[in-house]
Image (tube, rainbow, N blue to C red):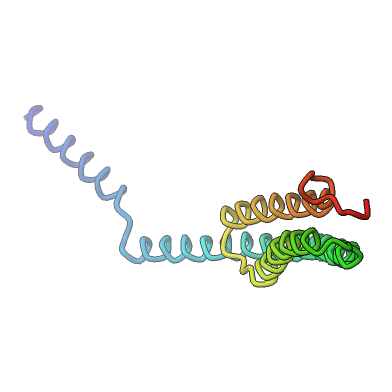
Length: 152
């Protein structure tokens, strides 16, 4: 008898634990819906944060782009004052490459669409680095030995 009561007690406890651990299908569905809603909310928050960062980044770089436009215009003026045609052609060719880079960077920032934090961080780092390189190249346009003008 004690043996039978022990077996029944163990079976009852096992069944109780098993049933208490199971959620009904409606509870599972509600939990899944809640998880989806939370995931969508988190995505929208992250997306709006990236979009806000993008607006600030564009404004900051708009000033740099305008500054580079002025630098390019000044360099063109100096090139036009160059009397040696071969030097002028060489300088114009070099400046054409920088102008293309400048146009490409402007297009990239104007057309960038926020897609996620990781891709935004990668774009921001890459873009900033290339803008810095262009700025340095424009500042030092006449500094390298192969770009000395005859009027210097």
